[in-house]
Amino acid sequence: MLAWLEGTQFSTWIRGELWGWPLALTVHAFGTALVIGLILIINLRLLGLFETIPYTSLKRLFPVIWVAFGLQFLSGFALWMTKPTRYVADVAFMLKLSLVVVGFVLALYLYGIMKREAASWEAAGAVSSRGFKFVVPSLLVWCVVLIAGRLTAYFGSV
Image (cartoon, rainbow, N blue to C red):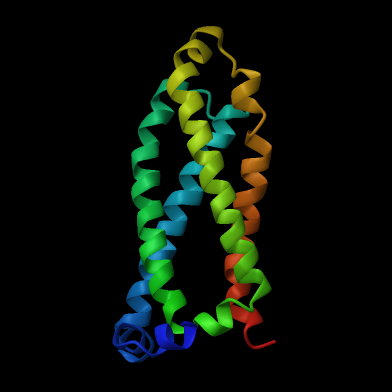
C-alpha cells in the first residue's frame, strides 16, 4: 500500500514537479507557524504573560488554529505521500505525528475550557486549575513537535 501511494501520479507530481514540493512545504511551514505560534500565545497568556490580552478574546484564535490544522493535515499528507516507506521508519517523524495528535487533543480541551470559563477567569483575574494544568504539557508537546519536525528532514539520511 505504501509503495502504491509513493507511485501515484499525485505523489510523483509533488516529488518531481518544480512547484509541487516547494508549494506543499511552504503551506506546511505556514500552517506550522500559525498552529504553534497561536497556541504559544494562548499558553503564555494562561501562564500570566501578555496581561493586556483579555482571556475572553483568546477564543477568537481557535478558528484560525483549526484552519491551520487543516492546512497541516493536507500539506503534511501530500509531503508524506512522496516517501511513505521512509517516513513510517523515521523515529522523528513518528514522534512528531504522535505528539501532533496529543497536541490537537490538548488544544480541543483548552478550547472547551476557555469557552466555558474564560469569562470567569476575566472576572477573577486568574486562570482556574482546570485551565492551567495543561499549559506546560501543551508547551512541551508543541516544542517537541517543532524539533521533531525539523529533525525529520535530516534523520532519513542517517
